Amino acid sequence: GNSVTQMEGPVTLSEEAFLTINCTYTATGYPSLFWYVQYPGEGLQLLLKATKADDKGSNKGFEATYRKETTSFHLEKGSVQVSDSAVYFCALLPRNSGNTPLVFGKGTRLSVIA
Amino acid sequence: DAGITQSPRHKVTETGTPVTLRCHQTENHRYMYWYRQDPGHGLRLIHYSYGVKDTDKGEVSDGYSVSRSKTEDFLLTLESATSSQTSVYFCAISGEGTASGYTFGSGTRLTVV
Image 1 (cartoon, rainbow over the protein chains, first blue to last red):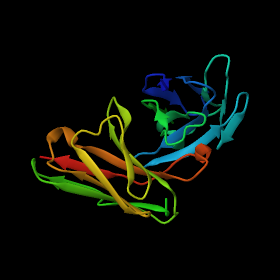
Image 2: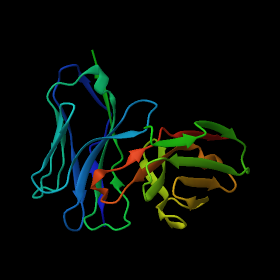
Image 3: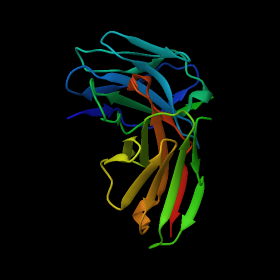
């Protein structure tokens, strides 16, 4: 079946530190991959996406590269800010999914301290 | 997001009472979804809809029903609320070509006492 595994949180970093949140997936074929972010008290927002192997999604200084050989889509940012404190969700959409909904990981909470 | 609204934003209800949550969209999107979010579980799909009167169950559908009588509204009903249904409920929408991802509402915090 289709599944997403994210690193357990919480992750606590100092401001300007480098961030990596690991995400690996299991899927038939080559899914589309997404990162969503949830700020406190809000719904999820799409952060970035990649729809085929070797694509790199990027937004707001965050990047993730679709790695088919390692079935991974790790989220990175070179220098985090306090405002990046949030919960991050990795998700996949199976290729030719028809009605199949997005499959989410369990989320990783990031806290950035000044 | 301005294209999707959930109501109410907060609700406290008693065990055994029926509760209906509403999701309204102005994007004319075909697909609508209801999720619940709980600590340690992330997001879990309750029900979803792929068109008017077309719905299907998600992984945690027991105790919930849905209705979609028009494109813009997707209702989630707890027939007889239980304390285990205390949660934050999110609605999401997506259009055709779902590589565009989902747009989420701001959530409804439901407490069953």
